[in-house]
Image (cartoon, rainbow, N blue to C red; front, side, top):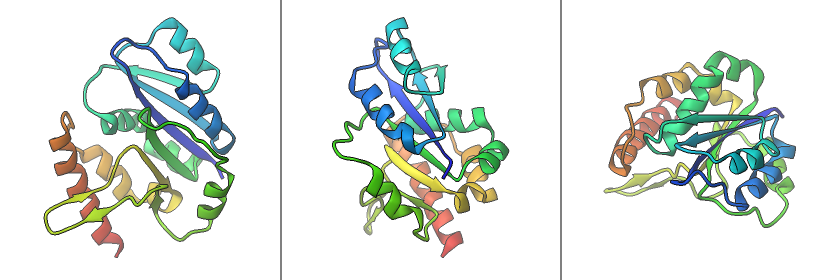
Amino acid sequence: MKRLMIYFIYDKDGIVDDYIPHFLHSFKPFCEEICVVVNGLLTEDSKNKLEKVCDKILIRENKGLDVEAYKFGLFHYGFENIKNDFDEVIVTNFTLFGPFFSLDNMFKNIEDQDCDWWAPFKWYIKTDNFKHMPSFFNVYKKSLISSPHFEEYWVNMQEINSYIDLYKNWDDKIEEIYELYK
């Protein structure tokens, strides 16, 4: 299974705390490539830490939230390359700590599941007044990344600069995609 991980980091001082290399190192056996997208600054010491556990570091303006960083990483690789070179794309960020246990079972148990994307939590909650899909860890499978709707979603995504923008734009688009696959 060839996986690309796009991992987003933001720290106002450009410092990468030690839990981040631990997280990335834990995922390295399961990922063909790990790309870290940094919003804003990155100290030289932090860059050195990251270079030991990732394949690529992209630094961009601190604009938008994690979804904008994921979009930046996806555009960097290009949708055709992603579609041709990877079986899954993991998007995740620095707000998660751990892991505190082996990831073998998580990846083994989901590999043959018939789904287009997955996450290691109850990822989609919908009520009459609220729907939400957390953006801090999602995995898109080949069936989704190969779909023209996947690229269209990211290309047409409006700029996300606040949590209100995030929920309004992200969840409405997820609902549209969900309807296509019902």
